[in-house]
Length: 248
Image 1 (cartoon, helix red, strand yellow):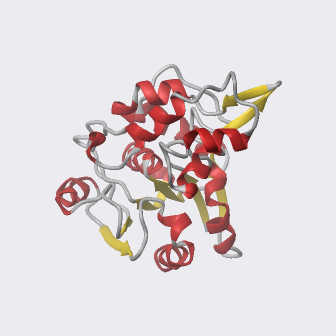
Image 2 (cartoon, rainbow, N blue to C red; image 1 turned 120 degrees about the horizontal axis):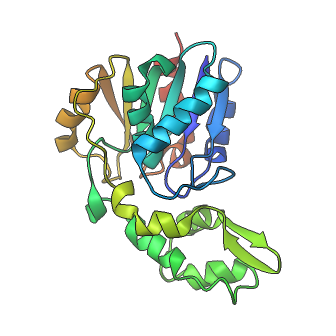
Image 3 (cartoon, rainbow, N blue to C red; image 1 turned 180 degrees about the vertical axis):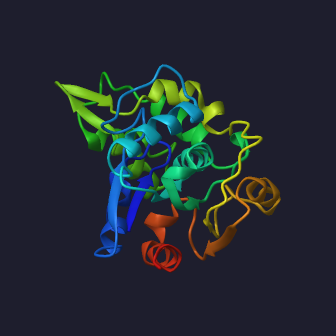
C-alpha cells in the first residue's frame, strides 16, 4: 500500500510523520511539501487546479508510476487532494479528505485570516530569536500548539529570520485558498473517507450534498475531541480510521 499525504495551509509534509510511521509496515508513505510550502518552489498565483496538476505530475513521475495510490489531504491539502482525484482519477485508489469540504468557506470558518495576518505583521528585521517570535505572537495567537505549528515555518536566514512558505502570496490570496474551484462535470467514483474533527467548524452538515455530488462513494466519520488538526490532536484515532479504510 502506498499513501501520499498532502498537508494544510502553512504546514509541510513532515506534519504527517507520526501517522506515516504508525501505518508501517503495511504502508509506504510520501510526505509532500505542496507548492509555496516547505522545500517546494513558489508559484506566482494560487490556483487549486494548477497545484493539483503539479502534484499529479510529481506522483506520475515516481510514487504512482506503477499504479494508483491512496491520497490523504488535510484542510487546504484536502482541497488539493479532491481536485487531484477529480482531474486525475487514474492516480488515486482511495481518497481521504480531512476536515475540509469542496465549498468556498470564506473567512466564516476557521481562523486562518487572523493567523496569517498576525504572521505577516511580525517584524522579522528586528527579530533575534525564535523565543522572541513566540513572545511577539502570544497575544494574537495565545494557543501554544497553534503558535508553535505556525512558527515551524520561521527559518534562519543569515543573521535574521525569514518565512520558508510564500507568506505574502498565501496572505494576499487567502480568499482563493479558502475557496474551491468549479468542478462541474467531474466525479470521482472511488471510495472516499471524509474525516471531520468534532470541535471543528470547517465541515458542516450543509456541505454533504456538494461532497456527494463529486464523490458519491463517501463515508463520513467524526473524530471525537478533535479540532481542525485532527491528525495531530488525535493521532491514534486518526490512524485507526485510516487503517480501517485503507487496508484490504
